[in-house]
Image (cartoon, rainbow, N blue to C red; front, top):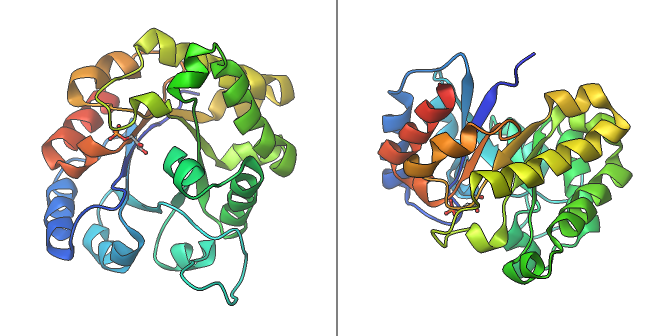
Length: 252
Ligand code: 13P
């Protein structure tokens, strides 16, 4: 069965209520696709409003982060997976490289968040990727294998039946440098191969997104690769015209 592509926008810490409303209005006016899904991940404070803005449209809503704690509790400043689900989110990003580097999220914490997301009925988008130094040290495969392996060990391969992986080379994020289609495909294929070893059926249906300076100009050639099933888009997701161009590239 062909994998239905996913184009996801990670807005990071950008926008305002009015600006976000206008951006979503442009996206909801777009045509849905039978071949691709569209997801937006606004900042958490805008999710409640965004639920109304996307209501009745083809656009899915996701969070950018969640607490590893399930249920409620005294965790000032945090929000749970259940709260995201309550706000109409279907997905949540976990282990983004900005969380790993600026907020010191370890592989173990990322795995706990992945499990907490699924406990709340959300599809986690697990981000993995190497730094420039790691790529130059030929450690890309080892880093990605470690990051995926930590979640596989903690959650089990069955958990990947309702999860997404995003390969985001850190050196390509927000830099204008994109992995070449061949570089990205090589890593995507290695991730899928890791999963194949444990469960071939789950591996075949797993969506593996590429993220890192994906733009309308390079989306087509990246998405043409066998194991690139969509994109996790930062900068270009803040511009409706660019995001829609990428979506159309994915929708074929
Ligand atoms: P850019 O598309 O701005 O490089 O960001 C990618 C990213 O980090 C998405 O999560």
